[in-house]
Image 1 (cartoon, rainbow, N blue to C red):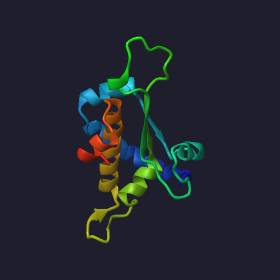
Image 2: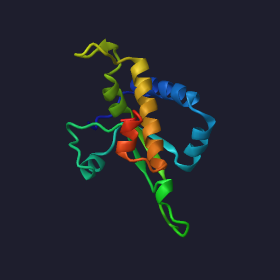
Image 3: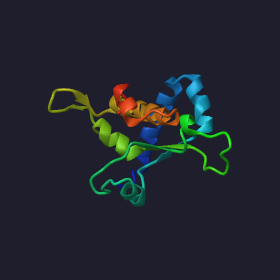
Length: 144
């Protein structure tokens, strides 16, 4: 979905993002200098449609844009820089929202801890793409 978030949600999300980022190893922070992390409320309708997603039904948590390290050529020039986008709305929805709850199977969902876990999964998933990991590779590692 493509609605924008109110300021309080942005601030709450960004505080949690800061906590997650502080917990990541220094090497990953160095990598983010090569492929900067861009935080948006949600992707554009055009991007979702380009990806074959329905803007009214589908959320997107993150997106890596660029050429993975495993596919780069030494003579390539003029390429757009890599970026990692993180989308607040998709992550909050995937985590189960802001209020802690349990799903139909009795698993915890929602709340700050679940949002932080989804932020971590999303950031590591997109960094994985930078290193050339496929969706299947990332799924096998638990970063779906």
